[in-house]
Image (tube, rainbow, N blue to C red; front, side):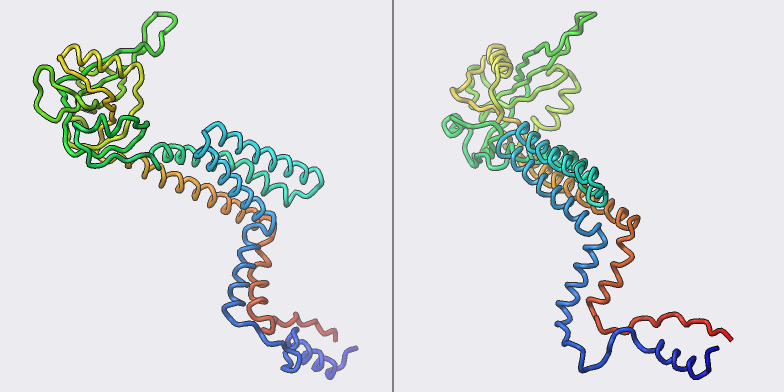
Amino acid sequence: MTSPADVEKGDASESEPLVETSAEKQEPLRPAPIRAFHAGLHFVFLLFGKEYGWAGFCYLVIGTTCSVATSVHVNWLAGCAMMMLFFATCFCFAGYQAVSGKYELARPLMLAAMMMFLSCILGGHFFVVWSKSAGKDVIKGASLADLPKVAKNYEENTVFYLKDGSVGTDYIGEFKFCKDKLPVVGTCVYDYYCTAPLLDTTYEKGVVAYAWVATMSHVSCSDPTFEKNVIQASWSKNFRAGLGMKRTHHYTKSIEEAAKKFSIKTAANAPIINWMADPTLDEKSAWHTGWMVEFIVFTLYLFVMLIYSYCMGFTEDALPQARKIMDPYAPQKPARRKKVES
């Protein structure tokens, strides 16, 4: 039977801290900012799946970076091939870890491999759109009469800012091209290539067009829908800016039709321009959208890993261990009192 003296002795020992608080045995603590930074890193490290989750996140970021960079600097297919290389490597490694029984490592890597499709294909698409005009030549302040000489060897998506000129919306040429032919009824699905001269003076017979504006439409160039969506919305405005377009066979036929119909002469090396208010609008939009897609994909991965960590029990030790790093000599909670048998 336990005596009252033993009970008091046990109470006294249980009320003492579990960590030694003697000043002689305590080592000096690191500066508070360093301890706070260390504790924060350790907390985040455990919160998102420990080394398993962060290994998948790093692989996802590296794979996306290589795939997008290849898409921008080489071509879209090369970027897809790079993505498949990273996906296959990550997927096979995760499968090997699963076969070996290391499921905690296999699951985050498998998730990273699957989400690589979203980050590379969706985000990479917008960066490819951005790269079409980013870094291209800029022709600024050139007069319309000098444009054929200045833009003699222009490339597609060259940015134009003109000094003068307006679109001759009353002198539109059209070339109708049968894109697809329905097999049963034999009806064609047409694309209409519409062009109009860019003039620096009022129209007169034999006027010289130093440049042309153009667009491809799914309705006729004389259709009211085209007049509302293209002519009134864009061509009738004095934007004096646009992006260079590739001179294809279809646009050449359309220009020849307008020149013959309205007695317009075309200057040699006259560029074809996509008329718009801000030629860099699509570039800026694609740049911001691409980064937004990547941010959403990476955040979604971390959110899933947060749920995974909670289900695996990693989060239970996150806060206590962070507190221990912040102050290792802080007194811990006393042990539960034992029941005294009478």
